[in-house]
Amino acid sequence: MALSGPAKTVAQTVSVVVLMGGLAWASVPFYDWFCRVTGFGGVTNVSETGSDVILDKTIKIRFDASLEREMSWEFKALQPEMTIRLGETGLAFYEAYNPTDRPIAGQASYNVAPYDAGAFFTKIECFCFTEQVLMPGERVEMPVTFYVDPEIVEDRDAKYTKHITLSYTFYEIDMPETAALDAATETTQTN
Image (tube, rainbow, N blue to C red; front, top):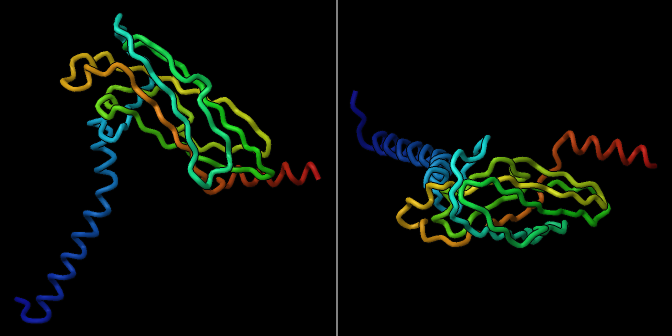
């Protein structure tokens, strides 16, 4: 049975809306996948182990820390930069401090510059993989373990990279339920 007139127009409009909704829903995971594969936007790789190859060529890694405007923490890199060999595992520390009188949960977003190097910067362990909760007055050191893939020397654009900047920005998130319960218990015990 063929649709005619207004019914056909409604069916076409609904089809377009469903198609556009599906594309919008799929765009976030597709963009995330694209960035991880290509390093576009400074997105890094993740690995459970270090590199099997270490070259004699070195690269300078710079560390940057910032906070979203509404975030009440203090946050900084404990070393401004380090020099490592390509493929060598590096370990850097950042420090966060909650100067307020309330628990605050945070999550770190990150990127790598220049963007061409993002596909070759690999994190093994990072505080940015999980939510962080700091109690009032709490100060913590947070490690990031990483390496720069030696294959960077074969890349048409990235092989000219002399330094990489790893940047983190902390932003406040809703308190995870378990942390909120722990904070409430701690407050009750101190009163």
